[in-house]
Image (cartoon, rainbow, N blue to C red; front, side, top):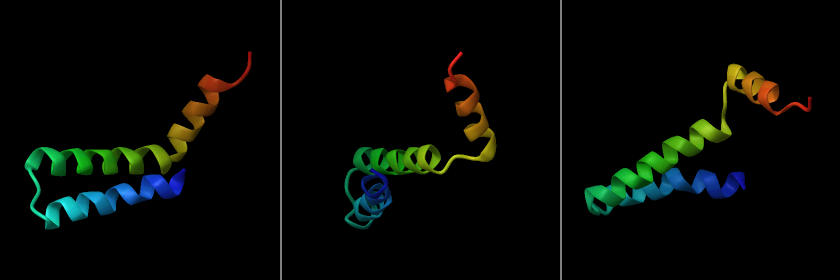
Length: 56
């Protein structure tokens, strides 16, 4: 799964270099930023996720 996510920044770079429409370039960049945020969380986010998903 992480390999698929890490391809997204390369799509953004390709969209920028190929001078695609701004809509597609912006979408690729936003997906890349979200992927980096989601798969490389901070310690506070890890603690938050652990707190809300623990069994009661």
